[in-house]
Length: 315
Image 1 (cartoon, one colour):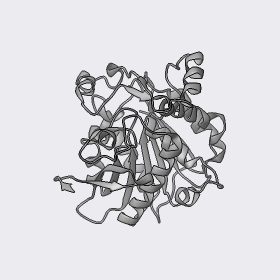
Image 2: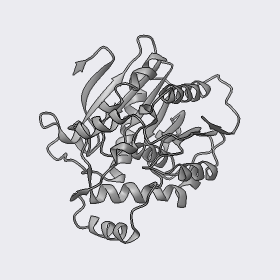
Image 3: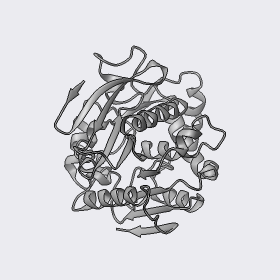
């Protein structure tokens, strides 16, 4: 275990005896809430080193991990599990990992806990909450105080060809861990060109994915709109945030998901003209993103009066 001035990093044993690289941001005083944060495809928690401390500064604890098949969990030879490898993941395993992470955070912080994710992680957060009452994870779902998804990968902004998707899905049943290219255009992440430049140079970012991981990520995202939105718990608040010029994931799909779910408290915020990574955008976009997240959390703490049932905002 090592400690910085802002976060503590640890290797923790999770589901399937997997060693996970984790970071914990703990405020100096007792936190008023906690976030379990899920990063996006091909990236890692280190890319949020500038954003997570801002939540910490607002009295919100953050527990985050390099997900199965990504970041240090998959690539750091000194600590990773023997069976861990880049891209080696599946939706079923991800749901188990999220359940474990939420339980860990609730036991660690003992405060209202929110599940938050970006891009792939945003769709995972929405998918975790949409498993239905028969899911073995339902007790964990009901323990959440809310869900936050930024730029969730429900649909791609430019969907892959159907024939290619079909072939990839079939192949994933036979060679699930085979890696194939999965390019993300660096210039589509932010209007700040240095973000894309850093992304390209990051040794923990790999522009490829496994057949199973990619198939599950895309098909389960689509399932949110097709069927799984029906299982959203009515009493689980949700905040959806997306940029209208996102060239990676579809803000229209996020809008459609918002419109379909029967949540008693739901809010969607669209950032006009913004790209995929709002936390890395130019001008005051990151500050506005932070304000939306903090306000949502504070509005759904015990004793607070919840906001109107269906909120929509443009920034």
